[in-house]
Length: 103
Image (cartoon, rainbow, N blue to C red; front, side, top):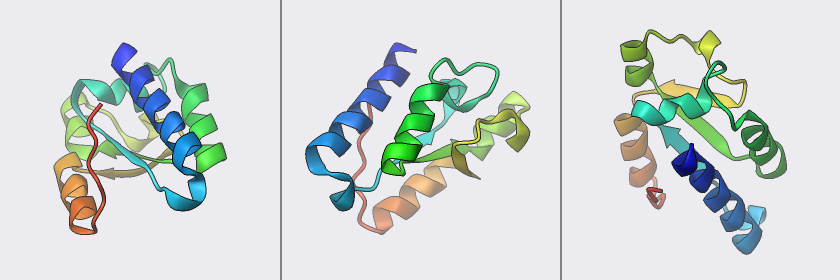
């Protein structure tokens, strides 16, 4: 939870410093971090909702991790937009010129 909270704080701080008109953030979550995006495990759902509402931050869950953990789309928080393999999504974003920041 400490790492997850830190990542969300970094996103909030980045938006506050740069401004939402100049920034788009997509948090791609996989492995043990997927608990951030699951209904039964996430302790930070209100923070995710606030980032989505205030800044239009995007949240992607790794479909490979979901499969390995026996999770379906119904197990995820409403704020989750995509469910694709994390490595594929990260490659797509980098090919589009996005910066990659790992918390």
